[in-house]
Length: 169
Image 1 (tube, helix red, strand yellow):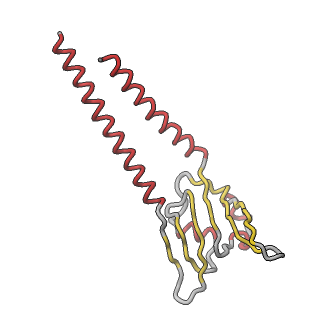
Image 2: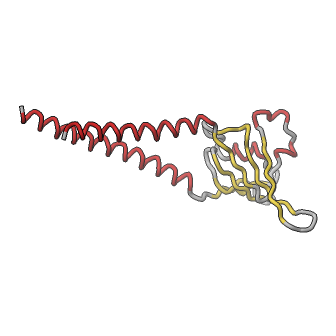
Image 3: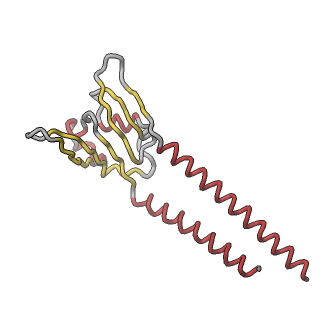
């Protein structure tokens, strides 16, 4: 009887070690994906001789980074060049941070909100990009919920492992 309980304790401990290593590898993979997507990446999309502007595209697009594009590129074209929005992109609340000169010569930052869900109602002037624009594509509420469930499931696994280990030993 004592041998069986010792065997079950060792088996359970070994299983928990393997399980924790599997979760650690999954977490390392997601961190690697974040690091790759978080690196500074520069993209150049212009024909030779085109006048270009440089803009930053951040957030929930397939290829965020610093873009040097033709000055005729608009917001929709830029997001398309970036591979389009990610699955959790919130297209009805895109923010553009634009640096402008005030009447007295000071530089002022202005935040512009764009709703691409109603693209038909937007004028070409509203979609126009300026040099130095910072465009941020926000995420939907579903992304926050997904992340919360991911964290809570990891915590539940840890608590379950601690509970079973305290019952075994």
